[in-house]
Length: 320
Image 1 (cartoon, rainbow, N blue to C red):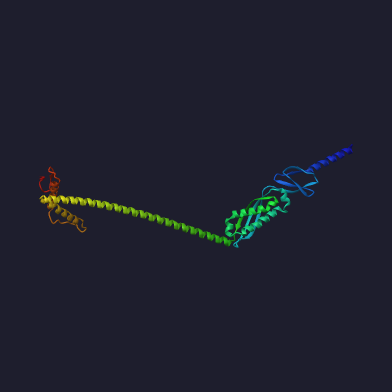
Image 2 (image 1 turned 30 degrees about the vertical axis):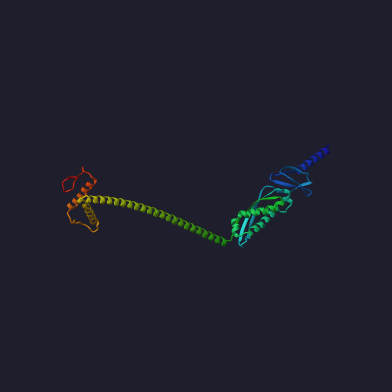
Protein backbone atom coordinates (compact mmCIF):
# COMPACT_ATOMS: atom_id res chain seq x y z
CA UNK A 1 0.00 0.00 0.00
CA UNK A 2 2.76 2.42 0.84
CA UNK A 3 4.43 1.80 -2.54
CA UNK A 4 1.16 2.42 -4.35
CA UNK A 5 0.64 5.76 -2.61
CA UNK A 6 4.22 6.73 -3.42
CA UNK A 7 3.67 6.07 -7.13
CA UNK A 8 0.46 8.12 -7.10
CA UNK A 9 2.20 11.03 -5.43
CA UNK A 10 4.99 10.93 -8.00
CA UNK A 11 2.56 10.81 -10.90
CA UNK A 12 0.55 13.68 -9.44
CA UNK A 13 3.69 15.73 -9.00
CA UNK A 14 4.73 14.98 -12.60
CA UNK A 15 1.30 16.08 -13.88
CA UNK A 16 1.50 19.31 -11.91
CA UNK A 17 4.99 20.02 -13.27
CA UNK A 18 3.82 19.15 -16.80
CA UNK A 19 0.87 21.55 -16.57
CA UNK A 20 3.01 24.34 -15.13
CA UNK A 21 5.55 23.90 -17.92
CA UNK A 22 2.80 24.20 -20.54
CA UNK A 23 1.34 27.48 -19.19
CA UNK A 24 2.59 30.60 -21.04
CA UNK A 25 1.67 34.02 -19.59
CA UNK A 26 2.19 36.79 -22.20
CA UNK A 27 2.50 40.37 -20.98
CA UNK A 28 0.44 43.20 -22.45
CA UNK A 29 2.19 44.84 -25.43
CA UNK A 30 4.04 41.68 -26.44
CA UNK A 31 3.41 38.70 -28.70
CA UNK A 32 5.28 35.37 -28.44
CA UNK A 33 5.92 33.15 -31.42
CA UNK A 34 5.32 29.46 -30.68
CA UNK A 35 7.48 26.83 -32.42
CA UNK A 36 6.76 23.14 -32.80
CA UNK A 37 10.09 21.36 -32.92
CA UNK A 38 11.66 24.57 -34.26
CA UNK A 39 8.93 25.36 -36.81
CA UNK A 40 6.67 28.39 -36.33
CA UNK A 41 3.08 27.39 -35.70
CA UNK A 42 1.20 30.22 -34.00
CA UNK A 43 1.43 33.45 -32.00
CA UNK A 44 0.64 33.66 -28.30
CA UNK A 45 -1.30 36.81 -27.52
CA UNK A 46 -1.28 38.71 -24.19
CA UNK A 47 -2.85 36.73 -21.36
CA UNK A 48 -3.03 33.04 -20.46
CA UNK A 49 -1.84 30.46 -23.00
CA UNK A 50 -1.22 26.71 -22.70
CA UNK A 51 0.95 24.62 -24.98
CA UNK A 52 2.16 21.07 -24.63
CA UNK A 53 5.56 21.10 -22.94
CA UNK A 54 8.61 19.64 -24.71
CA UNK A 55 6.71 19.73 -28.06
CA UNK A 56 6.05 23.49 -28.18
CA UNK A 57 8.29 26.26 -27.03
CA UNK A 58 8.48 30.05 -27.22
CA UNK A 59 10.51 31.19 -30.22
CA UNK A 60 10.68 35.04 -30.12
CA UNK A 61 9.24 37.63 -27.78
CA UNK A 62 8.19 40.51 -30.02
CA UNK A 63 7.45 44.01 -28.71
CA UNK A 64 4.20 45.21 -30.33
CA UNK A 65 4.28 48.75 -28.90
CA UNK A 66 5.42 51.81 -30.88
CA UNK A 67 9.15 52.17 -30.51
CA UNK A 68 11.73 54.88 -31.12
CA UNK A 69 15.05 54.29 -32.80
CA UNK A 70 17.77 56.95 -32.80
CA UNK A 71 19.66 57.57 -36.04
CA UNK A 72 23.28 58.40 -35.19
CA UNK A 73 24.95 61.50 -36.62
CA UNK A 74 26.53 61.18 -40.04
CA UNK A 75 28.25 63.29 -42.67
CA UNK A 76 26.33 63.91 -45.91
CA UNK A 77 27.45 65.69 -49.09
CA UNK A 78 24.67 67.75 -50.65
CA UNK A 79 24.01 68.30 -54.34
CA UNK A 80 26.08 71.51 -54.33
CA UNK A 81 29.02 69.71 -52.64
CA UNK A 82 28.45 71.10 -49.15
CA UNK A 83 29.31 68.85 -46.21
CA UNK A 84 26.66 68.73 -43.49
CA UNK A 85 26.17 66.69 -40.32
CA UNK A 86 22.73 65.36 -39.47
CA UNK A 87 20.91 62.91 -37.20
CA UNK A 88 17.32 61.92 -36.57
CA UNK A 89 14.80 59.52 -35.05
CA UNK A 90 12.42 56.94 -36.48
CA UNK A 91 9.17 55.77 -34.90
CA UNK A 92 7.88 52.32 -35.83
CA UNK A 93 5.47 49.64 -34.65
CA UNK A 94 5.39 45.91 -35.28
CA UNK A 95 2.06 44.82 -36.74
CA UNK A 96 2.89 41.18 -37.54
CA UNK A 97 5.00 39.40 -34.91
CA UNK A 98 5.71 36.38 -37.12
CA UNK A 99 7.09 38.47 -40.01
CA UNK A 100 9.11 40.66 -37.66
CA UNK A 101 10.62 37.53 -36.10
CA UNK A 102 11.28 35.41 -39.19
CA UNK A 103 11.40 37.73 -42.25
CA UNK A 104 14.42 39.70 -41.09
CA UNK A 105 17.38 38.62 -39.01
CA UNK A 106 17.93 41.77 -36.90
CA UNK A 107 14.92 44.07 -37.09
CA UNK A 108 16.40 47.08 -35.26
CA UNK A 109 19.68 47.02 -37.15
CA UNK A 110 17.84 46.58 -40.46
CA UNK A 111 15.61 49.60 -39.85
CA UNK A 112 18.56 51.70 -38.71
CA UNK A 113 20.61 50.95 -41.82
CA UNK A 114 17.62 51.42 -44.10
CA UNK A 115 16.86 54.88 -42.69
CA UNK A 116 20.53 55.89 -42.76
CA UNK A 117 21.05 54.99 -46.42
CA UNK A 118 17.82 56.64 -47.55
CA UNK A 119 18.65 59.75 -45.52
CA UNK A 120 21.90 60.05 -47.45
CA UNK A 121 20.05 59.52 -50.72
CA UNK A 122 17.33 62.08 -50.06
CA UNK A 123 19.51 64.85 -48.64
CA UNK A 124 22.28 64.18 -51.16
CA UNK A 125 19.88 64.99 -53.99
CA UNK A 126 19.10 68.46 -52.58
CA UNK A 127 21.01 71.74 -52.35
CA UNK A 128 22.17 73.07 -49.00
CA UNK A 129 19.46 75.72 -48.90
CA UNK A 130 16.83 73.09 -49.63
CA UNK A 131 18.05 70.79 -46.87
CA UNK A 132 17.81 73.66 -44.39
CA UNK A 133 14.40 74.93 -45.48
CA UNK A 134 12.55 71.77 -46.56
CA UNK A 135 12.68 69.49 -43.54
CA UNK A 136 9.04 68.53 -43.94
CA UNK A 137 9.72 67.38 -47.48
CA UNK A 138 12.75 65.35 -46.33
CA UNK A 139 10.72 63.71 -43.55
CA UNK A 140 7.85 62.88 -45.94
CA UNK A 141 10.15 61.34 -48.54
CA UNK A 142 11.99 59.28 -45.93
CA UNK A 143 8.72 58.08 -44.41
CA UNK A 144 7.37 56.96 -47.78
CA UNK A 145 10.52 55.09 -48.84
CA UNK A 146 11.26 53.40 -45.49
CA UNK A 147 7.64 52.43 -44.86
CA UNK A 148 7.41 50.69 -48.24
CA UNK A 149 10.68 48.86 -47.61
CA UNK A 150 9.66 47.59 -44.14
CA UNK A 151 6.16 46.39 -45.10
CA UNK A 152 7.37 42.80 -45.81
CA UNK A 153 8.80 42.72 -42.28
CA UNK A 154 5.42 43.34 -40.69
CA UNK A 155 6.52 46.79 -39.49
CA UNK A 156 4.73 50.12 -39.86
CA UNK A 157 6.92 53.25 -39.92
CA UNK A 158 4.83 55.97 -38.31
CA UNK A 159 7.24 58.93 -38.38
CA UNK A 160 10.74 59.83 -39.50
CA UNK A 161 12.14 63.09 -38.15
CA UNK A 162 15.43 64.82 -38.92
CA UNK A 163 16.56 66.27 -35.59
CA UNK A 164 19.49 68.47 -36.48
CA UNK A 165 21.33 69.70 -39.58
CA UNK A 166 24.73 71.24 -38.93
CA UNK A 167 26.53 72.95 -41.84
CA UNK A 168 30.28 73.76 -41.59
CA UNK A 169 31.29 76.86 -39.64
CA UNK A 170 32.43 78.80 -42.71
CA UNK A 171 29.07 78.21 -44.39
CA UNK A 172 27.28 79.28 -41.21
CA UNK A 173 29.31 82.51 -41.15
CA UNK A 174 28.57 83.14 -44.83
CA UNK A 175 24.87 82.54 -44.23
CA UNK A 176 24.91 84.95 -41.29
CA UNK A 177 26.51 87.65 -43.46
CA UNK A 178 24.01 86.98 -46.22
CA UNK A 179 21.12 87.22 -43.80
CA UNK A 180 22.48 90.48 -42.39
CA UNK A 181 22.86 91.94 -45.87
CA UNK A 182 19.35 90.85 -46.79
CA UNK A 183 17.92 92.46 -43.66
CA UNK A 184 19.81 95.68 -44.32
CA UNK A 185 18.53 95.63 -47.90
CA UNK A 186 14.96 95.24 -46.69
CA UNK A 187 15.44 98.02 -44.16
CA UNK A 188 16.81 100.32 -46.87
CA UNK A 189 13.92 99.49 -49.18
CA UNK A 190 11.37 100.13 -46.44
CA UNK A 191 13.05 103.41 -45.52
CA UNK A 192 13.09 104.51 -49.18
CA UNK A 193 9.43 103.58 -49.56
CA UNK A 194 8.61 105.54 -46.42
CA UNK A 195 10.43 108.61 -47.72
CA UNK A 196 8.71 108.22 -51.09
CA UNK A 197 5.31 108.03 -49.42
CA UNK A 198 6.12 111.05 -47.26
CA UNK A 199 7.20 113.07 -50.32
CA UNK A 200 4.04 112.10 -52.17
CA UNK A 201 1.87 113.10 -49.22
CA UNK A 202 3.83 116.33 -48.81
CA UNK A 203 3.41 117.14 -52.50
CA UNK A 204 -0.28 116.35 -52.31
CA UNK A 205 -0.59 118.66 -49.32
CA UNK A 206 1.24 121.48 -51.12
CA UNK A 207 -0.93 120.89 -54.16
CA UNK A 208 -4.11 121.15 -52.12
CA UNK A 209 -2.76 124.24 -50.37
CA UNK A 210 -1.94 125.89 -53.71
CA UNK A 211 -5.39 124.99 -55.04
CA UNK A 212 -7.06 126.48 -51.98
CA UNK A 213 -4.85 129.56 -52.18
CA UNK A 214 -5.66 130.00 -55.88
CA UNK A 215 -9.35 129.60 -55.14
CA UNK A 216 -9.00 132.20 -52.38
CA UNK A 217 -7.24 134.63 -54.73
CA UNK A 218 -9.91 134.03 -57.35
CA UNK A 219 -12.68 134.68 -54.82
CA UNK A 220 -10.88 137.81 -53.57
CA UNK A 221 -10.37 139.05 -57.12
CA UNK A 222 -14.04 138.45 -57.83
CA UNK A 223 -15.00 140.38 -54.71
CA UNK A 224 -12.59 143.23 -55.58
CA UNK A 225 -13.98 143.40 -59.11
CA UNK A 226 -17.51 143.46 -57.77
CA UNK A 227 -16.58 146.23 -55.33
CA UNK A 228 -14.90 148.27 -58.11
CA UNK A 229 -17.95 147.71 -60.29
CA UNK A 230 -20.26 149.00 -57.60
CA UNK A 231 -17.89 151.93 -56.91
CA UNK A 232 -17.83 152.75 -60.60
CA UNK A 233 -21.63 152.57 -60.73
CA UNK A 234 -21.85 154.92 -57.73
CA UNK A 235 -19.31 157.26 -59.30
CA UNK A 236 -21.19 157.24 -62.58
CA UNK A 237 -24.46 157.95 -60.80
CA UNK A 238 -22.87 160.81 -58.82
CA UNK A 239 -21.35 162.24 -61.97
CA UNK A 240 -24.71 162.02 -63.73
CA UNK A 241 -26.40 163.81 -60.85
CA UNK A 242 -23.77 166.57 -60.84
CA UNK A 243 -23.99 166.91 -64.61
CA UNK A 244 -27.77 167.21 -64.44
CA UNK A 245 -27.39 169.85 -61.72
CA UNK A 246 -24.95 171.85 -63.80
CA UNK A 247 -27.21 171.53 -66.81
CA UNK A 248 -30.02 172.82 -64.65
CA UNK A 249 -28.07 176.01 -63.90
CA UNK A 250 -26.79 175.14 -60.43
CA UNK A 251 -23.19 176.40 -60.28
CA UNK A 252 -22.57 174.79 -56.93
CA UNK A 253 -22.40 171.38 -58.65
CA UNK A 254 -18.97 172.28 -59.93
CA UNK A 255 -17.76 172.28 -56.31
CA UNK A 256 -18.25 168.46 -56.24
CA UNK A 257 -15.44 167.84 -58.70
CA UNK A 258 -13.22 170.43 -57.03
CA UNK A 259 -13.78 168.93 -53.56
CA UNK A 260 -13.19 165.38 -54.86
CA UNK A 261 -9.81 166.30 -56.32
CA UNK A 262 -8.96 168.33 -53.22
CA UNK A 263 -9.68 165.44 -50.87
CA UNK A 264 -7.63 162.99 -53.01
CA UNK A 265 -4.69 165.41 -53.00
CA UNK A 266 -4.80 165.86 -49.23
CA UNK A 267 -5.05 162.05 -48.81
CA UNK A 268 -1.95 161.56 -50.95
CA UNK A 269 -0.02 164.06 -48.79
CA UNK A 270 -1.14 162.30 -45.63
CA UNK A 271 -0.07 158.86 -46.88
CA UNK A 272 3.41 160.00 -47.93
CA UNK A 273 6.05 158.22 -45.75
CA UNK A 274 8.22 161.34 -45.72
CA UNK A 275 5.46 163.72 -44.68
CA UNK A 276 5.73 164.67 -41.02
CA UNK A 277 3.96 168.05 -41.23
CA UNK A 278 1.31 169.05 -43.79
CA UNK A 279 0.93 172.74 -44.77
CA UNK A 280 -2.39 173.54 -46.42
CA UNK A 281 -2.01 176.18 -49.12
CA UNK A 282 -5.61 177.27 -48.48
CA UNK A 283 -7.65 177.88 -45.44
CA UNK A 284 -9.67 175.12 -43.94
CA UNK A 285 -12.86 177.16 -44.23
CA UNK A 286 -12.62 177.01 -48.02
CA UNK A 287 -12.69 173.18 -47.89
CA UNK A 288 -15.61 173.30 -45.49
CA UNK A 289 -17.44 175.67 -47.81
CA UNK A 290 -16.84 173.32 -50.69
CA UNK A 291 -18.22 170.40 -48.68
CA UNK A 292 -21.22 172.54 -47.82
CA UNK A 293 -21.83 173.09 -51.50
CA UNK A 294 -21.76 169.34 -52.04
CA UNK A 295 -24.32 168.86 -49.30
CA UNK A 296 -26.52 171.52 -50.87
CA UNK A 297 -26.26 169.76 -54.18
CA UNK A 298 -27.22 166.43 -52.66
CA UNK A 299 -30.22 167.99 -51.01
CA UNK A 300 -31.45 169.46 -54.27
CA UNK A 301 -30.82 166.18 -56.12
CA UNK A 302 -32.82 164.17 -53.65
CA UNK A 303 -35.61 166.70 -53.67
CA UNK A 304 -35.79 166.85 -49.88
CA UNK A 305 -37.45 170.22 -49.46
CA UNK A 306 -38.09 169.71 -45.75
CA UNK A 307 -34.50 168.92 -44.67
CA UNK A 308 -32.17 171.54 -43.30
CA UNK A 309 -28.44 171.66 -44.16
CA UNK A 310 -26.05 173.07 -41.59
CA UNK A 311 -22.71 174.25 -42.99
CA UNK A 312 -20.00 174.93 -40.49
CA UNK A 313 -19.16 178.65 -40.36
CA UNK A 314 -22.51 179.65 -41.91
CA UNK A 315 -26.03 180.04 -40.50
CA UNK A 316 -28.41 177.17 -41.16
CA UNK A 317 -30.48 177.36 -44.38
CA UNK A 318 -33.66 175.74 -45.42
CA UNK A 319 -33.57 174.17 -48.91
CA UNK A 320 -34.55 176.11 -52.05
